Amino acid sequence: MKKFFALLFFSLIFSFTYSQELKKPSEGKSLVYFTRASATGFLINFKYFDGEKYLGKFNHGKYMVYECEPGKHLFWSKSENTDFLEAELEAGKVYIIDSEPQLGAFKAAVKLMPFDNDSNNYKNIKKYERKKEGILNAISGAKEYTISDEDLAEAKKDQEDLVKRSMEKYAKRKAEGEVYPTMTVNSNYVSNVETVK
Image 1: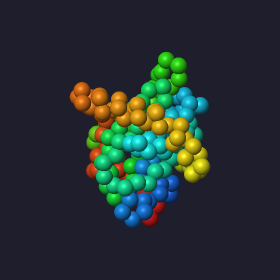
Image 2: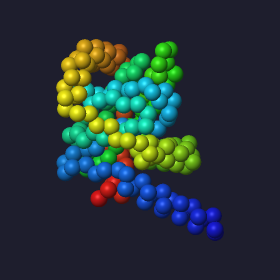
Image 3: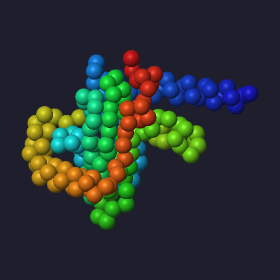
């Protein structure tokens, strides 16, 4: 019985602590957090995009919050490789995409992993809790990355060729039948209970 109450107390403290860390989207918008929970390749910047729109770049110890229109999106990240994630977002919901560093030939590669808030989709509850804690720690223990309009305009110009090549690569692979990870309306959002009201 003592273990049950200790676990309940820890869960309440855990939820309260992290509930203050997540923002709520504006009316009619969706909010996407890009995180880097793992410190592997911590110095390497991953670049982030929404389709042809450049969002910015950051390394471990930072996270990015992106408010956007609900609906279909193609999120992708560039490091040594290019990784794509198809998403369908709903207004008023908060989504989390964790950027997992992968072994690369010269520098860390990137794999975009949507956080699945359904604990039933994990092998066991401990794996779910570890993943959730790691991602929320990556938000609460990190600095929010923001890019200035001037830097964004300069970077966008520098990224034009990269965007063109990456969109062509995505279209070609998709036409050849490659299946990309998806983030769906109902299975990959953080409930409003966990966002700041």
